[in-house]
Image (cartoon, rainbow, N blue to C red):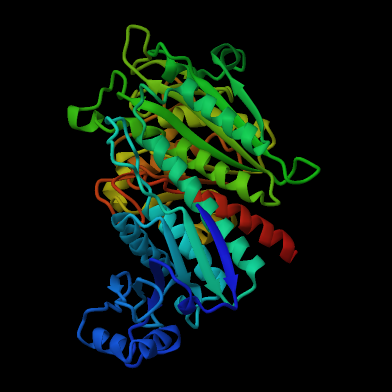
Length: 504
């Protein structure tokens, strides 16, 4: 998508097929709406009163101008009451606009940007929300069906009209686009079938990204993983013919590799449950069990575009969890990279195993802060539903940064308890240092507590996206399928570090 920023020009004196404008739910039209109303000889006021132009937030009306304006059609986006509008509402309102553009097959659009400004938002906020909301909402996973002969029409041109500084608007548009396209990359990865997105293919994808954004990259194959003693990752991979990969990417923003934020992703490309096999209803959709890895890769795409002044490392443990005569079994005892031994009580509790070795390896690479992301437990869905990400932490200041980033991203996080009782449960094994599945009660807590055993005091936040990584129904910011959950939160987290450093 290309855009052109027009400053101090009157969009009403230019000819476009489609012009987008905001309209507030208020007794009398004002601002840009008033200008349109005057050109229509009061017609807009009448249409609003009669309900033909919706002013409620997230409602869109396409209005043919019939020659009253130079633009053929005005797409009014309802913003509701000015005092009630939040940034999330604004982004979703632009999502509603994007859905309309896609349905109408609009390829070129003029936007009266300042018509969306309220008391709470600057033009730069509007610009970011515009491009982010529209790009997220228009995402579609093409899949593998035979292509239609009907040519696809995409939004190719945006003409932004504003009185604000063009360079600042340009920067805001770049941020919004990066956030949306990184999320869409994560969505595509989650939507891909596991026979096409194997651990090997995921590593190749990461390598291409690293080359594109000049990241340092290291990819460990099975031989190197064996040499490093990553027994937990190897155990999960035992039943598979496809070798595992440990993927490390580094964005080094300062001269010294210090104050490093590590983003650790679970990359289980398909999860059968192993010998603790999933039921038929539970096994469908397990291609999405690499949602944590997708979130990390999506975040790194954003970071690669925006290049924040924060050292960031991505660590992804990638494999599938299959059943064969070589697969690991309940009652096995394995040795993780950290040297801690683990009694296997449930082979379907495999995500925490690969994350154990990934966290240990991140620490070896100099991680000062750890945030792991994983589609880890059904327990978090039972506790919080399908629209909330569960979090555990050993460090409240780090969690507060993650929480602030999630609020900015519009991705809801809820902190779960992490107690000594949880730690005791995962340490309760007669034959090993740890067990990987203490019981069904508190399932999400024990899974997080297990990963915490490998952080060894490093500030850490665990994000369980089992409920939020996919959705069964479309919404204003995207279709059913992969959501790209936490990609934007992780990327925006780097800003919290930069801001904190600037304040010191």
